[in-house]
Length: 138
Image: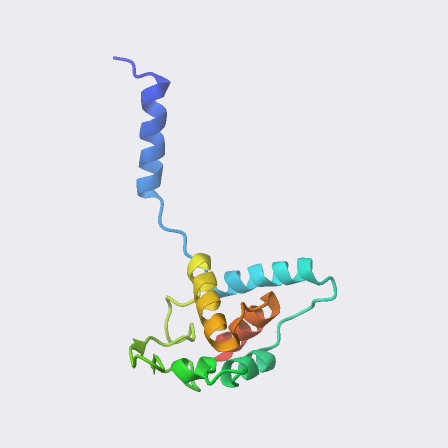
């Protein structure tokens, strides 16, 4: 019995999808994506700055909250939500290997938290600076 391509092709695709592992990215790969984006936004861009990222993370910006309000001054520690007291897993990738491994989740996280802290979305420079800072936490 000979199977035609209309049967074999869907079977082959299904098998490949089942056998393929989920593609997680590393925090560095996500940072590399921000680097490429920053270069398209500003030809003079060269590198992100961990010191700027630390300042953005720890300081308040017109609201009562900073990133550290929930994530603590040490992002390798477990935090808690400032309003709900709900525990928050460590933010630093060195303390939580799941952090910054999904571009979709990273963008969702930045969107929500930048709006809470800054009352606006973060720029690519701000995202890259904060991630660069978080990658320095050991």
